[in-house]
Image (tube, rainbow, N blue to C red; front, side):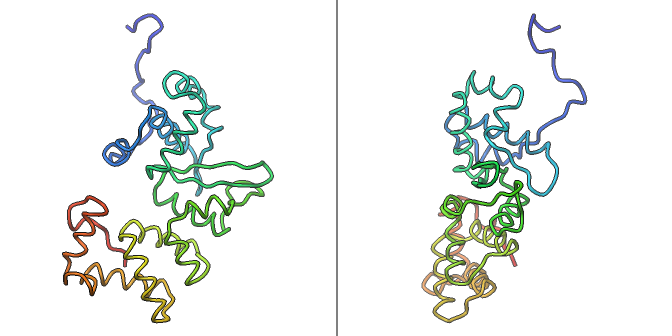
Length: 239
């Protein structure tokens, strides 16, 4: 029996919220306040209950959920703690965010950062996916949040399609920033302004080393450890 007023325990068939194991090693150490953790837990739970291509929440959505306000008031800094926690999760890479404008007024929407969310964000940014009726992604905030690779692509190649947007995100997560900038520069100097050509440059450097670095894979493995802290050989190759 539970103590008076206590919790009686979870039923055998209770619904659950899945949290990737990688969260505990790669994200949790970056969070600095209880509200940051609460924000991720609430966002994960509410997003996993949704269906459809674009699954996201807002701060107001979380705050209105039974139990959310009480948990943040008790140990997460209240409503300000929720908003700060969502931003901290974006900074840590656990959530993606977009700022919308439209008939319902401005709103920031948050996605759990995974492959499906990256596809949805890319489609929303390109105008192919409407996240809310009569809404659009606000350019100023989204542009500042985009990785540098997006700006490089738009400046040197052109409009980003959803498929290209996903490949750009994968490349940005795979290669060091200076490699990406140098690959765009080399392609521009050769007047070969296509992502396929730039991607081939990056893959060649990963396999053979850059011309001004030590030949072979040592240069890529050293960059991998310097930029990502992983053991050599664990970065995926996208072909």
